Image 1 (cartoon, rainbow, N blue to C red):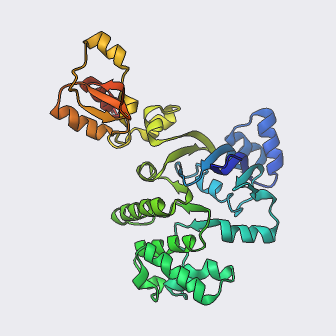
Image 2 (image 1 turned 90 degrees about the vertical axis):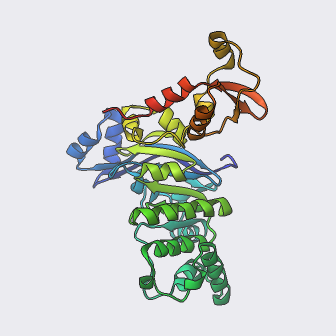
Image 3 (image 1 turned 60 degrees about the horizontal axis):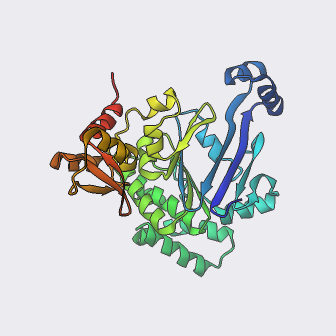
Length: 351
């Protein structure tokens, strides 16, 4: 495994039913569809031949509609579910090969999980909830309380350690859940729609909080969501699932600008390109521009190739000149008002 790769998922299948192995064999031999598998074997294909890798410190968002297989998939990383076939490696460890005792240790030391429903212990204080993974690890009480208090400070709940879950708002409870997952200092965070049960304003605040923590802690994260806006805000890369399969994996810009099929195109049709698309995806070759329009003025505005479409439009409002795009100090492309308009129009959902 590449040193930069923390998670490697290879050809994972999950089929629910009495005879999953027979169903899988029929799929591979006969090319049965999901509906045919249900009809012939009374079995449900939850995950279908999924492969991908996640790099160190990356936030990898897996998204799709209800029933797409995203939550089923994430439960394989800590073996809450056993796959029908395939392999998952985390930090070089074959998760499927772990004996029960080793699996328990692996879960406690390598993986932290944040659930949608908070899953706090109502009889424990906030501090005790956060310290629980360290208690399972048999860390001495004073030390685990010290570490738990430090994590609560990071999520800005240091003053609430003596309170109980019912005394906290939903957003605060979810921050406690996040703190508990972080307390054991895991290599990998699994987050299964952690903010979806919250009101929109609180959800956005927690997204901001999570982004802030990610910059500080640099945890490799699998983030499950059905909300494309959330995935775009949070994810370094996004994987879109449908019927148990990975349809497309890429940055938000990749997916919005180059959808793999009509399903993905429909999925991303309502996403604003203003903060997602950057100059390098819009620019045209300089030579081609000069051949068509003539020389570019020496005082033409210049931007970095990572400049957002939103800022490019504002610049074009103020200055009608072509915009030069730079990689470092080298001019690598050019953008006209027509390029900007074309990008915006192509990203507009037409009724």
